[in-house]
Length: 194
Picture (cartoon, rainbow, N blue to C red):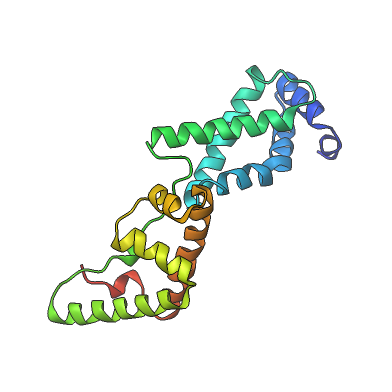
């Protein structure tokens, strides 16, 4: 194993392809795991989806190294292309834009119910509104555009005159903050009555 760790990327690829060495493949994958995960995290914000995509890309890399890799000394750009192509295919299959935020809003649902449930939902809404007020004005405006005006991410980005990817990253961070603050105040999905 130690002998494999000292090998270059090209030597590991040759060992994997010619000798069917899984150890060589695993070392190569470990070297580039951070880069692959970073590329995925730039497009997908859900950790479970990130893990699934990493596994899919690992399998695709495992298969494609044997037949499709031909560029001597250019493994890193080839790998980045493979990851990018896989992510594009993934989003096309889901019929979503590559830069669209993927977020589960179930934890934010609030609706009417019995009188006790309505009072609890009012408390949840009150906590939510107070947390939103702690955010900067720009993010408050974005939340209002998304949840009250019903605009798409693309429409909001155009109105704010910022790139869609920038808006998505800011929005995802704001949602994480919002969820963390609500959980800190004791608001969980069990608090809602719908």
